[in-house]
Length: 353
Ligand code: ADP
Ligand code: MG
Image 1: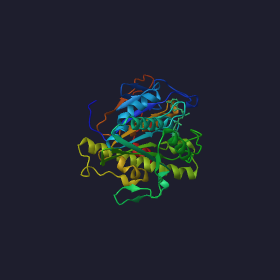
Image 2: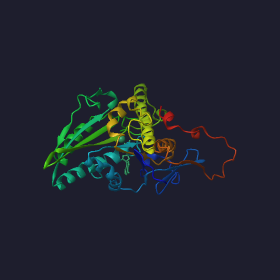
Image 3: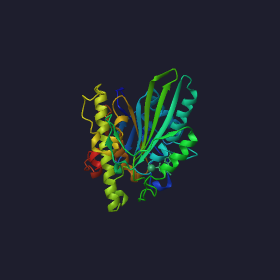
Image 4: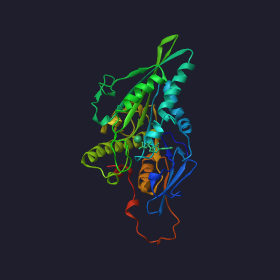
């Protein structure tokens, strides 16, 4: 694959099988290097995607963190960065982003890495603070004097140690909205944005100040509403969630197109940040000179086949990524069989409406 400058890199992580996955065909998702192939539900079409990184089922939390480390480290140079986990409920988004005490994910590993960096610094001082937003779609957003989208009453909490972070963050994260759906009893019904603010001051030159920001975003589940048996309130909620995910997709598309054309300033393709609160809040961490990284989480199990293809369609959101449709070798089927409905050309945006 040719390397083309992209504003948002796309990684994939396939989680290990779980008894709740139901029927699983081990050959339905195949990873080879940084390519992935997924079989549709009917078993007669294979979709091929070349992405920036494809993690298989045996990848550890540490290896996942190693693959995002360079994105995070850009914040030490005063840049804004953002990492998202995207996928259907139960695909491993929260595991990847948050993890557990025994098997920590990107958030705790990032905080540890920042404090390690702080200890290693000799000629400068690093101060660290964080904010946490869940359900951004319900927050009041204003434009600041500097032209940034801000939540006026957002609390930015300075932190002095990993332990201090854990205590305050655990309390904040408990407020995150979850509701049970058929897919997962602790399904997350809201996006959660953790932002780490880094201020680096050169000790002998206080006028030289670098400010970097790292947004670690665990997105709400991208599932199809029909699958989850949602009631009216859930449907309304899902529709707001899906609008923000659709807009995120459009923003990713536009940013990558601009980056490919070597155009990271305002003269490129219009980037529709304003169409959702999620993308408004992430505006300064997406685009400009910042680097974004999307980790698309996949679940094995035949019932997820359609979500897998939708998620991969979302992941390949860049004209630079090749997308080929391969016909699986399936001699059981008549060659002239009509295309089943589920594999009619999928437009990721339409699928999420
Ligand atoms: P999501 O946030 O996408 O809804 P979760 O992260 O909550 O999904 O994952 C669903 C379940 O699968 C959880 O019990 C989680 O611990 C488990 N899980 C997800 N990914 C992995 C993984 N890579 N290794 C082991 N368990 C995983
Ligand atoms: Mg989750």
